[in-house]
Each structure stands twice: as structure tokens, then as C-alpha cells.
Length: 611
Image 1 (cartoon, helix red, strand yellow):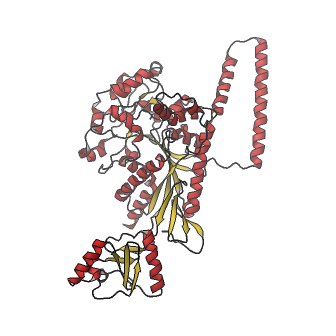
Image 2: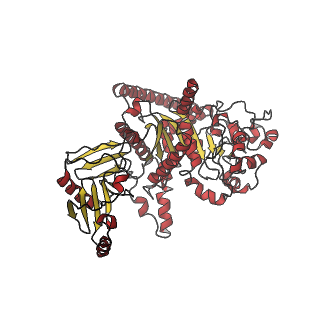
Image 3: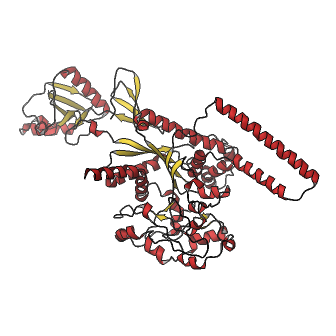
């Protein structure tokens, strides 16, 4: 839906995701704004072949167009294409001709143009057929049309974008810099299919935009490559290009560079999108983020402003409290008190200086937009939070790990056999380590139960009556739930901290599943309708035997688990599942369900009002 002007040597216009640089010649280039180095040539079609409506080659098309304008400029062309123009011209002499390198063109009138091949075999065939009484055009000519069979209209433009989704990659982007572009394209194409099937009645549109933040970073340059041994070099290079990103992020020297790289790219793309779609902010457009793997941790730290310095200050404060409780001599205590007062005075001076600077310089927000939904896919975020000292609380609010003032909704998506993914809910409420994650509906499920209506169900109901007191189970069942790589079809977590042996056992050792897990994950597509009304519906049992009693529930569920395939090998899935999210129809439907939720409710309400 772009209108091209002329008269300038070079000019640029904006069209949604694209920047178009236009030249005076009938061709121009399109640049994807999220990958400025990639140039995709786009030719303006002028002359088309009758029947197939394929455009001629650019060089021949330009020559025919120039000759046509010189000979027929100002003459009226037929307003529309009908069946009559497809009939060959019989007995009408050509009024103008143009010789090309391998072909020639005859004009019988302003809108009757034929292309002929000058190859020897074509000339012989043309001579024979003409002697048999056939016309030149009907025997070997190809009808040409100036302009396409259908004219563009205002209705051809895509619907207004009401929601943009930034797709953030994790580790490994250095190996294949264009991979996030391809993965986002797969997710976008999959979402289009879901939109056509389930959300075609809505006038709004969700756009997925890739965020490639890794390639612009310098980090250590080639220092790590220079110290890498030559033996099994291919494997070492693969590890340097993937797993090394985790080490960079845990390094105090390079962590800020990674955070600023992603933060600046998010803000740049948002400003760029708004400049090309000025109505987006005016009409209350929303922004969500889909992050994968390590990208979830970096995105979380950007939104919350977390940094290691804050953790260090907390540790120092804890050490001071422990020293106060320990026995020491009078001189040691006096010096400790002086040190404490000096530090307190230093903090006061730093706070006053910070307030003075803040009053003169207004600090811009970290992100230029509020995040509506933060979708984590295959995320190790829970482990990072656990290692930072986050422990379960007593409130079922998402604010315990991510304030809703920063992000309205946090959703953690994972495949049951993804070894990198962990659960978040047990970090908020401890007893959720024994509550099943919400099962994501299959794409073709008939009348699925809305996610907000699905009741929590226990992973191992048999444990309810025999659960140990909290004091005894503290070491055996730590507070944070470890997402094992293979827990059964409707299961999803063993507690974090059981050690490597426990992790491997929970990942691959459970070959048998409880009746509940078998029922919810293995009944196949033919049971979709039944599953829609039964999955996740068993109410929580009421028990007086320890922390399994659900005295507090989460305001909103956070952990959502994909269903395993019927013939899926857990060992093979453990290798492939971490990168299997992009083309999943189930995930596409899940994402759009939450992003279109408000629009769908408003549409349903208006339909009811009409009735």
C-alpha cells in the first residue's frame, strides 16, 4: 500500500516493516528495517503475459515501455480486461514494431500488443502456420498487457496493527546471525494461519518483529578464539558461539554490554515502528515481548533494572547483621560501630547527590514502552532468580518476581522435555512445586476450556496424604521447582536442588506415568473435545497434612506446558525441544489468545448489545 512519487534522484518512504528507497528507473530496493544490511531487489511490473500474468524481464519491459510511450502517449487504453481482449488479432496488420535481442514486438493497436520469438524454429513454425491460413498472432504470438489484471484498491492494505510483539533470541545467534529473522518469520506465518481460523472477525492485527541484539556487540573481540585449542575445533567454535554467551552474561565486565545492546535495540525498533505508524500510540497500541532461552533473563533484568551491585549491597548488609550477633571484644565492637556510622553517612551523602542530579536531569525510562505480556519460551529465568536469593512468599501475586506496574502479565511456556526450561510458579508459592503446569491446548481442540477457568491439579495426588512436615521436607523438597526434562505428559516439575543424580533421574528415569498424566496427554486428537472439558479441571484436594493444602492460590497461572506427541521419544525431544517453539501452531494460538483477549471480549460484548 505505498504510493511512489517521482522527480527526485533518490527518496525513501515507509511501509509498515519496510523502508523503500526509490530511484527514477522503474525499479527500487526494499530494506527490511530490522536487518538493514540485507537488500532485497523489487521490480515494478509493467508488461505482463496474457493468461499467466507473469511479468516480463526488467530489461525487455523497459524497452517496450519506452517504445510504447513514444508511439502511443496520450491515447486511451481499455478501462478493464474482458474476454474479448484474449482473442487473437486476425487479419490486422501491425502498425508498429520493435526489434529486441531475441524477440520482436508488434503493435496492432494501443492495447493489442504481441511478443514473438525470433528463434529459427519459431520462424519456421510461424511460416508454416501462416501458409495454412492462420494469423501470425494466433500461430506464435504471445499477448502482452500493460498493467496487471487487477488494480490495487485501498481495501488491499493489511488491517491496522494494534499489537506488536518483539521476538528476542537467546544464545547461539553468533553462529547464524539471520536465524532470529527466520524464526520470527516462521512464528509470523504460523500466527497468520491461526488468525485466519480463529480471529478473522477482528479488525486488528498483531505484528511480530525480530530483535537481533548479538551481532553488534564487541565483547572480548577475538580473545577467546585466540586461546581456543585447534583439536575438535568445530565443536569448540560451536560452544564459543553459543554457550559462551552465558559466561559473558555472568561476567561483571561484559554483562552491561549485553543488557545495553538489547535495551537499545528494543527502543530503536519501537521508535522506528512508531515513526512509520504514527497512529499506533494514538490508538493505544500495545507491546508484548516473546523471549527465548537466555533472552528471557536479559529482558527480565532490563524491565526490572536488576544488577549485581544491588545483590552485593544486600550481602554486605547481611554480613553486618551476622557480625552484630556474634561475640567480639569491646575494641572490635567500637571499631565496627564507627565503620557502620561511616557507611551510613556515606550512603546518605550518595542519596542526596543522587536526588540533586535527579532533580536537574530527568532520567528517561529504560524502555520507551510498557510491556503488556512477557512470554518466556524455554526459559532458565527461574534458576537465575533462585541463585539471586528469590524465595517463595505468602502472596499469590506476580508482583513477587515481576511487578505488574512494569509488565501486566508474565507467562512461562516450555516443552516437557526441554532441559533448559524451569518453572516460575514455585518461586511465588512453594506448594505449586507439586501442582501441575497448565496444559496448552492443541491447535485443533474443539471448544477448549478458557485458561482462566482451568483449576489447579496435583502432579502426584498420592503424596497428599503422606507429605512430610515442612521442617522435614525442607532439604528434600527445596522451594524452587526444577523443571525436569521429561516429567510425564501432564506433569512438569521436580523440585530444584535434588542434585545431578536426582535431576537425571527425574528427567529420564520416570517411564511410568500416573493415571492422571496418561489421561491428559495420550488420548490423541480424537479426544480433543473431551479433553477440553477435563484437562486441569480436578479441584485441589483439601488436606490438613502440611503445605500441600492450597490456602493461597496464584492470581494468575504463569507456567504453561506444551503437550507431548503420541510417538515422541523423550531422549530425542530433550535434544530438539529447546528450538521447537517457533513453528508450533499450539504456541501461536496460545500467544494470540492472550494478545487478542481484550479485543475478543469487546467484539463479543458488541455482538450481544446488537442482539
